[in-house]
Length: 264
Length: 264
DNA sequence: CGAGGTGGGACGTGGGACGTCCTTCGGTCG
DNA sequence: CGACCGAAGGACGTCCCACGTCCCACCTCG
Image 1: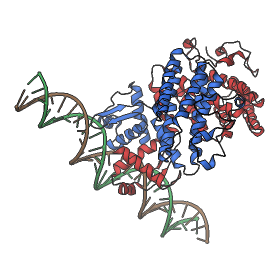
Image 2: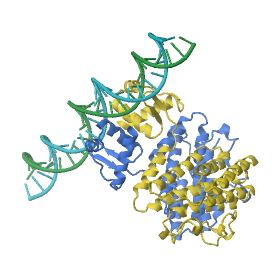
Image 3: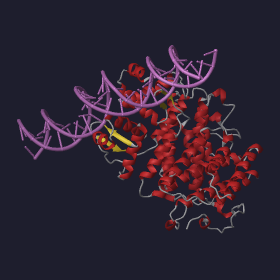
Image 4: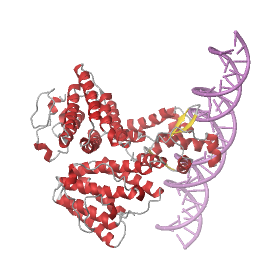
């Protein structure tokens, strides 16, 4: 059975303690040791390649893969694109997961953040604002900010998960032709707010700032005619506090502020 | 190229708006329409099968899959098992992600939880306590509790993600021979605590209760000789409040309470 | 001594054949 | 007349063989 060969190869990697990057036996050797034909071996390897458990290099060999979250990205992207109806709902689900994750993560990070960390984040935000003044987008800086933020957790899974969701969101947006990004100045402002709250060790403030950051992303994915339904999941009792604002955009009322985010 | 054929099949599903369960063209038809050999088609389908984008039924046909998170489970399980060193560290990472997720999710749920929801949760916890008195474990009830809890969010991705992490944890624990579960009474107590906090709309209390629930799971995965390093990531200023306790176990001091969880 | 050619190893693709599983349809038996 | 059973066909599973492509390493030649 095909599934069984897959498990055999995985077990072989585990038994031999092969680290990522180590060479696997050749297809011919696997044929022999597993007692199956080359086609069966190849189908199993192709399946493992799709899971990033194995890496196949043409003309060179087969190697143990990184076991990254690439299959999650592929699967979620496909699933989101396959839902022709409830299009933005599927994306909103992904954004909600990202928001929950980052809100909880910043909760863990905000208390004991290092001065060195703050300096690195300051550098990133500074470059963001520089790019924003030039009117340029800065997706790489955005990712770098969030990655740096959670580096101190020592949890390798966290940045990979966040990157996976980020990747899915942008791939779907691109496939759907949603090329309009929010104004760079607004995005830079949101990150400045987060950094300011972190500097003051203001945990709930940092959570609010992070939440508003995602609120802005969410608003972008809604067609204008559905803006009335608005973003989901009010944050709860935190609403009573006036949100901080770095001042690069005009002050806003108690509304969600979508009118400032480029939504027509 | 193999990757291209995979993309072609995915694009075919998207273009024809095929819903999950719909039949795909036969391998022969795909050979013809894509202009490649059957081997190549089969390898692509095998890869898509591993991603749960396609479902192959022997002697029957190929169908559009559910695009579930099965590949994530497989990948994370493999990756965790492949790290022979830092074994428990990898598991702790997964648990931390689960904890962050559920802590943030219960934050969103606790405020506006329905009476009907509370009644359903009460029923589940009641069955838990019944099973605990009989000394039996209740993994299904555990899953049902957490699934029910987040049902009102209307986010289909959330329970799937949680189930995926749950699945990875238990598969790894089983493969590692960590069969010792915490005392059922303790687990039932933890869920009772969560429910009590929810009933009082005590959001931070619910978060603390959820956190303690995970703390208990975490302690179980640590070998006794490493218990000194203890669970990571103190929850922050929430520590000052005395944790609630349903009273089925003895009160505990400011420590992490591992001594009550079956750790030798 | 070095640059380029050449050979071998390993994966990529194609074609064909046969086995296995499932469904369907028609015939037979009760 | 109806239910059961076997044959036929479709579709996937496995296998074998051959050739193409890519990469590396050795060897030869200038």
